[in-house]
Length: 456
Image (cartoon, rainbow, N blue to C red):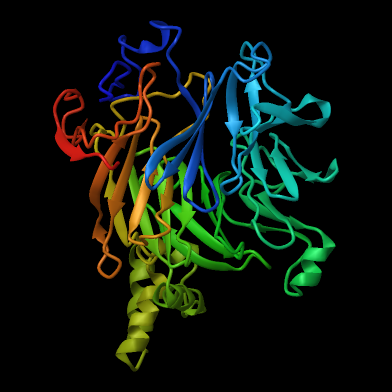
């Protein structure tokens, strides 16, 4: 179905049979974005864009060579608002960065508006609501109103090469983006937002990570924001009214770039995808929250100084403190206060290991455009089946996985459906055929693997 050249070696390099230079008619992926309802996604390509529904998987629209073709030969960044057919896009011509966001009406097949960033700054990210559009550049976020189209806010940030920016879809608009200091989150809103929510601050920043931010995501109500740094080992969840930390979650001990974060609609689960081919699912319930609070409120006053935390110094301090504690609970609490935080941060509740990846976690097929900033798959929870998770990958597959909401553990692969191929004659199959997927045990086994049924 999609077995084709472009296989990646174990070090991530494209092999010599890369199809990019073989056929000028081939198309590649430059951007993937899932809508706020987690029901559809849009894909920017080297020739235009495509719109898909997730359940069932259907290519709803395909626009190539957007008019006028000589001005927009590829879509570098695109987003969609719920299920509307209005798409803000940025493109490139000859590899030059685009400083414009153009609004394309898919139903009418024409551009209906344009916004240009001040000083010709390159557009790196776009977020759209019905009343405003936020555009992220490397050091600034600009907010345009839609009626009339004028800039209503200018937000300065630290270096933001990923174009991170998000907004809640309901209520007065608020912008979440990197702050002016490394690793901080800035939440900006207008005065009417604070009038609607007296507990909210109009414009504030709070520290989230030591390193630069790699990923941001909001829950459906806009009350929680999840963050990940460029290390990718820790995921944090903050409330958005004042920046209070609610959860600190460990994705892995191995550093990896987080490509996508997604809350379930009821905020009970948070999923994190990375470049390593594994999706981690965290449970956000009262038990996890209580554990976080216990760690924050645990006994810290008697903790030995940094100079003492080595060899006999820490051992004698621990023995003396425990010996002076009269209860078992007190002794255990004292021990936890000296245990490195690594061992106390909650781990993932469930995990999904994607097939078609080699031992290093690299996909066997790579259909990204050369200028794409995609680092990994995009994820979404199925709105009608809370224990199902969609993984939209740049290798051309959509994986559907299910997990046990009570026990967690290893998630089960439900289906693997080919949604994209560079070939111009590719179509999504609807005849119940099969897609060949590789378990990942052998990085060169591109023509062998298990067979999964396609969903229609």
